[in-house]
Length: 116
Image (cartoon, rainbow, N blue to C red; front, side, top):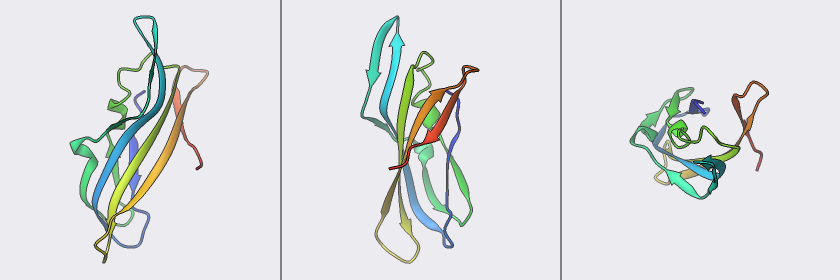
């Protein structure tokens, strides 16, 4: 699972104090032939913090590291939580992106956004 995850500022003004967390909701895998399910684990990397994102600017997230050892994964669901401060205000907003991975016929994983 070597997917690059990215966030972008689709607004008209910059956003500040951007922090993203990669969370495993449900990952079914095998470890030494033993079925294993990972749930409710959130990881925040130092590379997931950005002082600012200008309009149309994108930033990559290292969420693929969370699932790096899950080569034997059967299925995977993840949530990327993003907190940021909009321009001209002092409070932070929080947005969540729910994703599900499905293994394609070629053996590669395809991530799709799950509507909430």
